[in-house]
Amino acid sequence: MRGRWTVIGLLLVALALIVEPAYAAHHLPTHPDRHAAAKKVPIKKAPAAAPTQPAPKAVPVPEVNATPLAPPPPAVLTVAAVVAPPFVTQRPDGSWSGLSVGLWKAVADDLHMPFRLVPADLRTALDGVADGRFDAAIGALDITPARAERVAFTHPYYTTGLAIAVPVRGDGIRAWCAVAQRFASWPFLGVVLVLFVLLLVAGALVWLFERKRNPQFQGPWYCGVGNGMWWSIVPAAGRGGAAPVSPGGRVVGLLWMLTALIAVVAFTAAVTATLTVSTIKDGVHGYADLHRVRIGVVRDTPAADALRDQGFVARGYAGVKEGLAAVAAGEIEAFVDDAPALLYAAARDYPKAIRVLPDRFIRQDYGFAVRKDGPLREKVDADLLARIGSRPWRDAVVRYLGPDEAATALP
Image 1 (tube, rainbow, N blue to C red):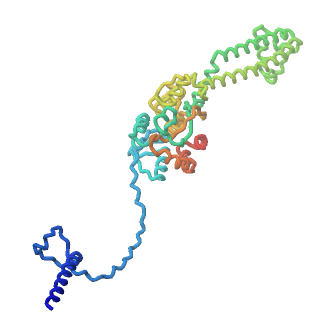
Image 2 (image 1 turned 180 degrees about the horizontal axis):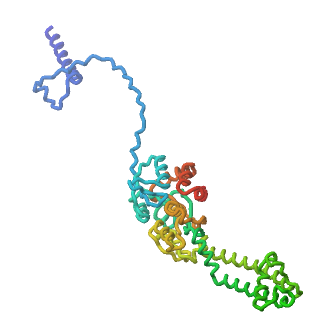
């Protein structure tokens, strides 16, 4: 019996040795040091697993109406303003007015482009737009090939040309003095002398034929010749019934009447032609008359270049105001410049002393100057085309320059 229990004990020990490593591998924590167990480090028990909790319910997210971010406010444009009435005028208080100013402001408001105007002369304005100091330039800016190489121009908003301002003549004492001067000229005196000689010949012939047969022509020869001349001039009603009675006298009387009729017609035509031609030569009536009179122009402008290219020699003036003053003072007979500038200045400063001729020559188109590398031209053109065809723009041109100029300059 003792041997049997011994065998059973050995089997239990062997079973324990086999089961213990497997239990340790599954239920005891691992450690890199295999001798931890030998050192009898106390083994912490794993915390008990927390009881399973139900998953939280989903919370609905409120809907948000997302809107795109507002664009940043546009930068303020710097615009050069070239003073050129009636397109750009600066008042004493520093404010601006004029056709170009009003048109640019309307376009800028439509496109939501804030801007500020900076005064500049023509050369500074174009140079500033070309090198980027200015975003744009406004005024009476004529679009020329030379300028278009440096800056970009918008669609033309005004079409005009060069015009001629001349002094007003032909009324008052000046007109009567001109007529008296023509009657005192040598051509007129020569015609009168020829008629007197013909009258003397006719009177002498009548006296020769009538001195022996007609008592009206008797007496000394000078009296008879005088009576013959008187008879040739004074109508029959004033002659007291005197008339040639001899055949020769009647032939002379008939020939003289025909000659006198032709002479009177020729004399009238000559006097009329002389006065008409003299009057025409005295004034400037168009472009063809500029070659024979003293003319003026504003220096360093397209008008000055155009006259020089046509072979004209013109005096240079600082501006339109100085040129019109020279016309009024008689220093020059004509002043050439852009038609709108002449019309506005003449109507304001010399309404009765200077007039602007209706003819226009050398076409000019006005536009706004902008930088070549910017998008401003495309934006402005689209709105500008709609603006210049509107009634407010036409009314503004009529208000500044009159209906005749508006009919010529606007489409």
